[in-house]
Image (cartoon, rainbow, N blue to C red; front, side, top):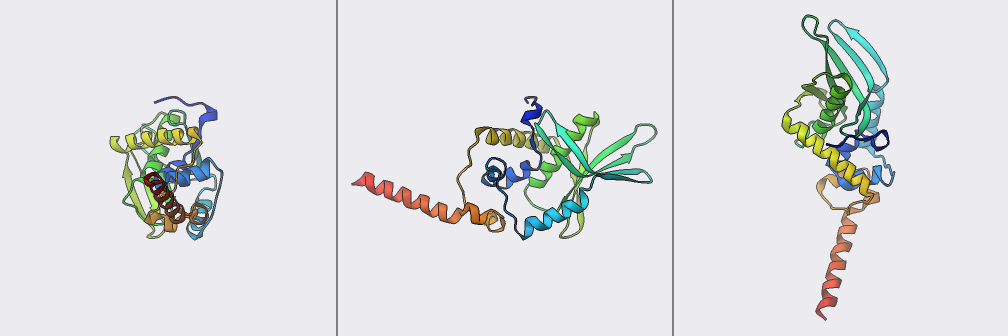
Length: 213
């Protein structure tokens, strides 16, 4: 994988945007648009409460809030909501353990896990330590979901980072494609996926009718 420069660095949070919807990702990171709804507002408030830079210590755990993260290998930059440092046995030091806070509930897709894995890769590159696991904290059920950074998840994370750079580098916003997830997207009124999809169908019908004449 290529080594990026400072000018190439993209927001780490864009990985989740890309996996949720490439068009949404392009609207945010290419067209520089933002549209808030109830869900994004709740998520923003949760992150604002957590991301205040600072630290605390309790027994064998040190906690860093809003920790800056960067990976030149993935070309990503951002902040970790919480990075716990667990004291390891004897004199081996401290084990980093990233924790990402999310507004909703656990997902069957890997969107959040990829974002968390990217944080782990940043920590490994910055600190020179292995980061084998982390956790996702979901506000809806107030539970942690432990995540092991397997080889498969790491490959998916690296592939997603590469796709993100390709999308942003191309500078083109993909066409809208309607799915059920569109209904909860804050960009629905801007994207208009149903209307644009119907318009494309009509255009294809007219083109076909003209060819048959």
